[in-house]
Amino acid sequence: MFFARRSVASARLALRNQQPRRFDSHAAHHAAPVNESFGRSFYVTIGTFASCYVLYRLSKANEESGSPSWISNLIQKWTPSEQVFEQRNAIRTAVMEKAASDRHLFASQGPRETFELKQPEVSFNAIPPYNVSPGQNADLSHVVAHYQRQNQELEAARVARMKDGKVESLYE
Image (cartoon, rainbow, N blue to C red):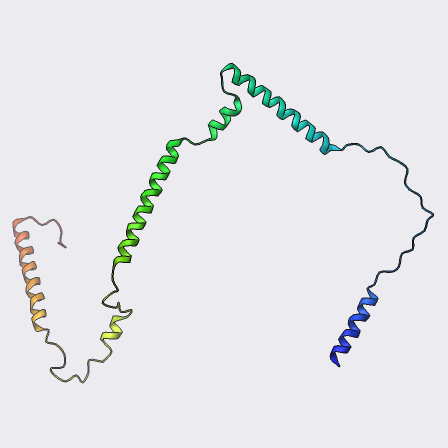
């Protein structure tokens, strides 16, 4: 039902937007004959060909005299030298060789044996330090004693340097 309504509505719009008829009559005659010129583009094309021919003949005359033409000089002026290309190619070759060696280096490595932790403090300190039974954690007293001894030696060396007058900075 809806399809029928839609098709009727679209047909109504098509009839409303239809162009009116135009009638042909034989009363109008042809326009009067007019002389048509070649136009601007024709003359521009002919002028371009003529100027190219004159330019070619001038350059040939200069080449026969032994000196290069001004067109050749212009081309040589804007053409980069071979040394520029050699330097550029050498740099690009060195970069590509370095990239290839890096790629081979990384491709020859095996898979990683360890995984980097994104948040090690969350992974290792997941349990709060309260209510920990004795003996559950490792004994770190020997590590603490090592660093205390190292700090005492550094302090004694600093005091000895101060007595000798060889101190350059407070924070050595």
